[in-house]
Image 1 (cartoon, rainbow, N blue to C red):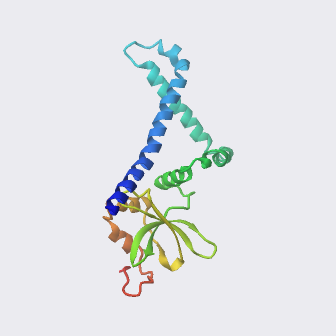
Image 2 (image 1 turned 90 degrees about the vertical axis):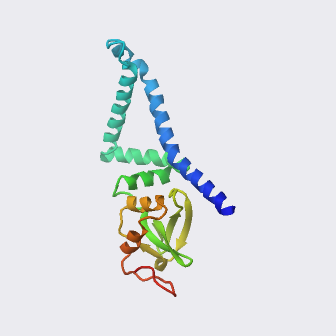
Length: 205
């Protein structure tokens, strides 16, 4: 019963963490469209009545603003302003840093150094994990996700010999977790011949 309750709780939490940013993004989009309706109304009146001009023009105007902002933050000065804005406002929002890191990893950003796929030794097993940070003394902070909801899980601080970074794409590791571990053979194979600290047997083969 406890296992069922834990599964239900982690599944619901994982679903909320995935759906929440999508819902908020759509809500902000609709609010922005409503805010610019008065600006596009004079142009909309010039178009045929059968065409939803106000909605279409509002949508394209919001997309144009998003494009201009996105292009601006790619410049050195824009990037500095964005980072300062994030530190002073967005990083105070719980979960923002996690979603930002996850989004950048899914987009293949080379600027983000977290969420490095790995296999971690927990008790007598190898478990899929992600390296979040590295200590000065060599220890790792790792996030061990749950299956099939990889956005929920547990955080461990482990010594180097218990953490095995693997050379696989971030998306491959996430896909394996979301499929109840299907594809884990590739994760273990990517670990190569690194030694494990297990006394009984090694799972690296």
